[in-house]
Length: 331
Image (tube, rainbow, N blue to C red; front, top):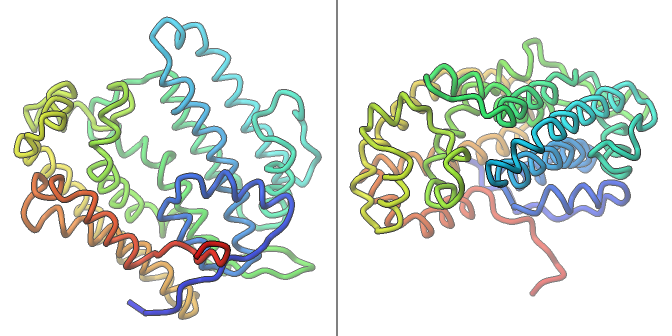
């Protein structure tokens, strides 16, 4: 991995500053990686990520956190909001004015930013539509019984957003033409398997936090829980009581699935190198390295040992590969 300098923050202006406020809130690895791109591609990323953050928060932090009775009463309203969001995405792609300025979940800043970027690109709106399909499944609370159910969910929930990042790595911007990519395969082809690998590692990394919420927010299929001979309630108790050794089998099963996608993911992401320059390849490497090192830490002494040192490991792996964008306003 290259040791290129830490990126400097770029002032992008309206409407992208509003998108940055949404996108940077969780300081995710993908956000920090995208801030290494050129300013025009940062704009596209911020518009894309903010537009997805808006609807994801409505579903995850709003609807799915509600008690059973309130979710039942609000389900149709949230599904309608998803339809409105998808209509806004399609309109932004066409370069049209906001079709739902009063009831659509995208405000004027996020909508305008998306119209100025997605609307001036050769990227299809498919990643947004696939995310909407995954979120409809969340709202419907469809059961995730089999591993294939999990993979199907991942196609929209994580691989589709990751495909936008792959597109942006390869994209070139021209004032007259807009954004174009030379990729011969779809961005999803290059992103899918590494995105699934990273998502499984993400689930294992964040399990102590996610388990504090409702069971429905823990995206581990029933098939895996049965194989690990454990329930969501038992996971919650084990973490709460620090009995991390009870989770070793669960961790090893999920890690095995993760590595099943790693080899294909590495090969398909490696195919990008012919169209990426050195800095773009370095950014991709840095993003993957965070999750590869987390996976290595989980394997080295077992998942229980990782959980015991989780906070320190997370800080080291993130900051060594994707340090925060430097902020000269802070000493």
